[in-house]
Length: 128
Image 1 (cartoon, rainbow, N blue to C red):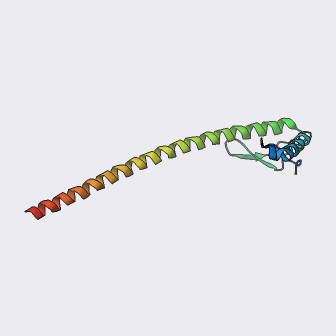
Image 2 (cartoon, rainbow, N blue to C red):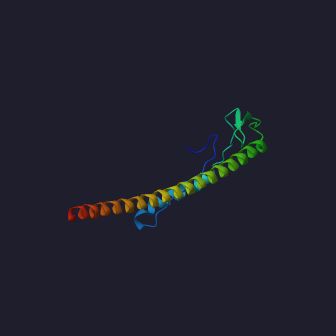
Image 3 (cartoon, rainbow, N blue to C red):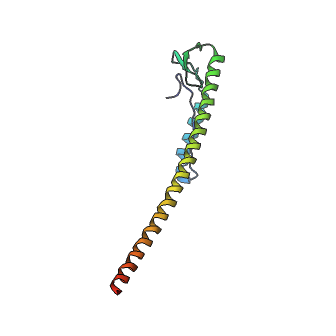
């Protein structure tokens, strides 16, 4: 359902297929009707979290849009920071993965050399 005390985003997905014209038209009509719905966003919690993670009492009254907008902006900044950290962690993981692959390949080459040298040593021992 649309409405309530939250932000809502509607994504209408349509198909270019001629077989889904009715469904696509219905989706577009619903999306057009949904655009007219306006929500009054209010904070549900009495405790808010700062960007640094420290909890503080809520200063957002249901009628004060400035405080809600500030809280929203702080959450967006925190989200961007966490996304950057996730990207850095993914890059570090990719580097470690390539290092492990390289070490595994080197280990396989070394094991192959050991096996061939062992065979040569056995042949040399038999020859004596």
